[in-house]
Image (tube, rainbow, N blue to C red; front, side):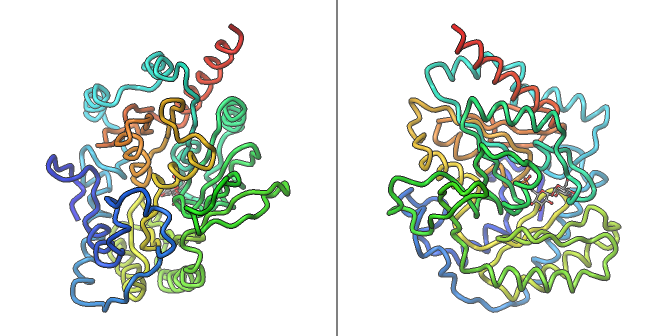
Length: 383
Ligand SMILES: O=P(O)(O)OC[C@H]1O[C@H](O[C@H]2O[C@H](CO)[C@@H](O)[C@H](O)[C@H]2O)[C@H](O)[C@@H](O)[C@@H]1O
């Protein structure tokens, strides 16, 4: 799979993912379907398909994607590239013309927010916490936690992560926020006025005993995902550095610490397991392959869902801002861009094609941005 930017292709399209979902997602649930179908109860009716020769081709295309996303193989413009050189510094400044810094454009953002309520959506890894080798040690700093806590006092704030909801809650450790785990497939939010349009919602209680709404559109697949997790742990156990993470509604296979000469073994192991589960598809993040349910649900849908749940879906009164660094965050950027209703902010220290409007270099700048929002809101309230 070639991840190089192609001006004629949709931004960051993932051919493997797309072709697989086209095979199995009921037509009414395809991304272009009208919003009414978003909460269809039939999200999991994926027909069985046989594994075939195409699957081997797909396994090798995943290896290509893994290689092309490594710094030695690419110069600019892709999602897992993490080295910064003098050349890329020049490229970065050129790129920033298209994706200006949210800090230097702060006045523009807040001008647009005049008379509106800001709703804030934050990704976790690479946004609130720096990318580190061991996913279990991706802690956010004390300062960042304080900044998130403050900003959430002034603006409705949600964390939307690829991690399991419990895990990201453990990392963030703040109560006055909303949390969506598994790339938006596990949302704990406020009780909706009407759940007619969201049949996968159940009433539950949060850790403080407060009544909340739990939305888990792939709930039926939990045993399957557990099974896949166990198979992947088993099949990758001999690969030095490989790590399998159970994110509840998706399974992540990390290859950040695997010698590049063994990446093909990782790709093959993952592919060999996933090919037996047509209800799952593969996607690719920062040095990670992820198996996730074939349902028409992503971080973009999660943003729409949370805005509705919070009674904040009127674009005239609300300005949603989504801050994220990875490919799955693009779904949310796209929803905001296409709905012409909010701003996506891409966190990146290298140029990447994106549906975001603005950029921030790293979590440190994210923290500055959050603090600026608080200062701005405080000043406004004091007037
Ligand atoms: O949506 P996010 O909150 O950004 O989560 C996406 C994935 O993040 C984690 O993996 C990434 O960060 C790790 C820690 O810095 C890094 O070691 C890994 O290489 C990155 O891919 C998390 O472990 C995954 O489960 C998430 O899906």
